[in-house]
Amino acid sequence: MAVDRSDPLSTSMDHFRYPRHFLLLTCFSVLLSVMSWLHLLSDLSVSFALYGALHASALVLALRARHAIGQKCLFIAIAAGLSVLTLHVGIIGIHLTGMLPGNVGLYTVMGFSALTGAVSYGILIRIFRMYELNASSMAVIAVGCTLATYIAAYTLAHSHSLGRWWLAVLWWYAFSGGLWYYDRR
Image 1 (spheres, rainbow, N blue to C red):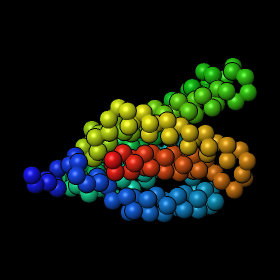
Image 2: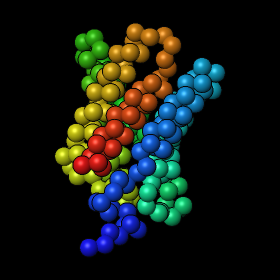
Image 3: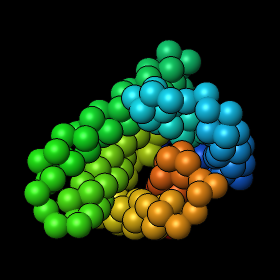
């Protein structure tokens, strides 16, 4: 049986060019670091929109299957919007959990935001027919993103050289690492 290479959900090959994808993520990470050092991003919503747009751009630029340019741009825009939405839900969550002792509320909300952000992004990837993540793989990737967020928060608390961009970068690598793992299986 011949393999249809034009089918975006073809199971016989990786859906993304992962070396290119991870190289782009690394370049975007350096860019965010420099932008943070130069204090170019002060607005949280703009920062989170950029975080979502950069990861989505790295995915789009690494796609193996052809997709219309309009579809790619829409994907990037929606990913940016999802990132901002996750931020604002998290801010509301912090206000609602403000009575909890210590940092319990903060870490609960951060974990929930990382988890729901990963699931909603996985659904977006599926809707745009870039890769058909199933529920169990989405759950594992979401847990990985949650753990990456906790690691980022811990390292941010103990390092003065990193900025909030560090949260996004570790989340990116957790999500993309999970995507790579399931795409290779």
